Amino acid sequence: MSEVLIKIDNILKKYDDNVVLDGLSLDIHEGEVVVVVGPSGCGKSTLLRCINALEPIQGGMITFRGEKIDGRSKTITALRQKIGMVFQSYELFPHKTILDNIILAPMKVQKRSRADARKEAEELLDRVGLLDKKDSFPRQLSGGQKQRVAIVRALCMHPDVLLFDEVTAALDPEMVREVLDVILSLAKQWKTMVIVTHEMSFARAVADRIIFIDQGKIVEEGTPSEFFDHPKTERAQAFLQTFTFDKVEKEA
Amino acid sequence: MTSLGLDVLFKGINMQRLLAGLWVSLRISLIAIAISIFLGLVVGWLMTRKNIVIKAITRVYLEIVRIMPQMVLLFIVFFGTTRLFGWNIDAEVSSVIVFSFWGVAEMSDLVRSSLISIPKHQYESAYALGMSEVQTYLSVIIPQTFRRLVPLAINLITRMIKTTSLVMMIGVVEVLKVGQQIIEANRKSSPNAAFGVYLTVFILYFIVCWPISMFSKKLEKKWS
Image 1 (cartoon, helix red, strand yellow):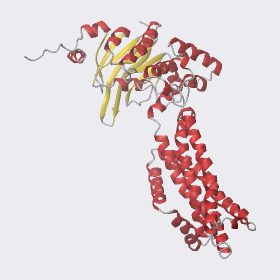
Image 2 (image 1 turned 180 degrees about the vertical axis):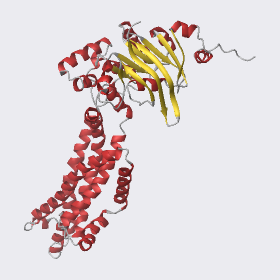
Image 3 (image 1 turned 90 degrees about the horizontal axis):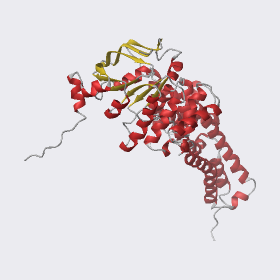
Image 4 (image 1 turned 45 degrees about the vertical axis):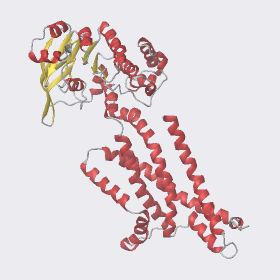
């Protein structure tokens, strides 16, 4: 198996007395697509936020290529450049055009020239079919378009791993597809990704490995076919049951 | 036909005197506004910090300013402190102190509310792109805060300019006081002067404040 990129080792995350992640360990390998599923409030989004130190952890350790991830360290901005993140609510910068949204961090953080950043941003925008929107403002775009821009913005930093936090949860159903297609094409290019989603058919298609979390612990993990077709634990079975509906039998 | 009382304005140097009075009003408000904007930005930012002591102090300060009529503040500073501390500050300086005291409080509250109206996720998405705290503030948070702040600040600025008409109560000869003097001096020769002079004062205030509001409208339109 390929090299371990992110090592999550026995982490504890709590808000006051409320334990959200409870001794969770997980290795993410280079080129791997890990999909994290679980009931809402199980801690899966928190897990992603801990990986790039948006949330401090109270115990255990997360390392990226052997380097400890710590929100208070001086090297955190360098590490975060390697860890791209896309949020549920897109979070484009509303006062900047699409192009400026994308090239802001490459210019400010990586000190790349405007021309260089712009060239790459335009190529990436073209790939997701939004080149004609480069001079628009975020408010002029649909949710699906905004989310594709947010993905491009993360990609333009050349991250080694991308974290997707329920990126389609705020979208209208017909816009979900256009965003998921972009992520599927990234998976084909061997991008390392950690994806939190409620789209089970997408999870099955994109994942190399499914992680099922409940109450802050990994309850089950396996390949998509193992997990979806033959879930081993009762909790996973119950969880998957919530996505299927039996035909209504009208009462006599 | 009854006279509108505008004739007094053309007697002697009355018009120049009114304009000189207007300059006094503007001088007081401009200095106070400059101080309010600068300190308001600092104090407003401090108010968003989680320090309990700073929070308590700024809270009390803000409440005092809100509750106290500006005129009472003027009287306290100009008349009240003179004997108590044995100093002799002139009326114009007292006015600048009071208007700054008021302006900083209101401005910092506007800055605070504009800052906290920026969603937490805006900070996080900037951090997630590897931006430092300083870069995040400079490129993401402050530009957005500024856009929310400008219309509110301009409203405060015009209110401050208008309220300087109170400073005549502590003896500053500003535009309104000059107007009164002109009216008094011409009571016999132009009994209708009150209308003409106050109308002129009104127009002078309008000429000062209107372009400021128009500027704000223009910016809002550009940013929306």
